[in-house]
Length: 154
Image (cartoon, rainbow, N blue to C red; front, side, top):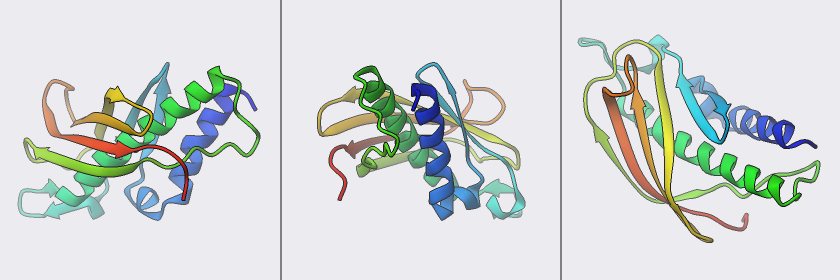
């Protein structure tokens, strides 16, 4: 399996295998080693219909899933560089140890984007910052900072 094929399959498998990701309609796009996640707007994502504003739970889940997708992507790229991508390749899913969300402004009823920045990655733990925006990347609607457990499946 090629590096790009395994990488694309990995993100597609993540999207297809987790029902909440399917419900949110998340789409992942890779440019080099960076993942941009898209949460397309749909009325089911509105938490406060009076404003209207995106539900905080959907926004928080979007941030966490974006962090996990970036960590999985980084793992796949590193394993590919070492030549360790068998046909049934499936790295262990990173698990959140702790995560803090900052809701900076109401998410409007429109598409939302996110990117994760891996600030430090060790053998067992990764420290990740995730940012979400709608109209301009400089105007974040939410951010998260989390520590994720890496390692063996199970």
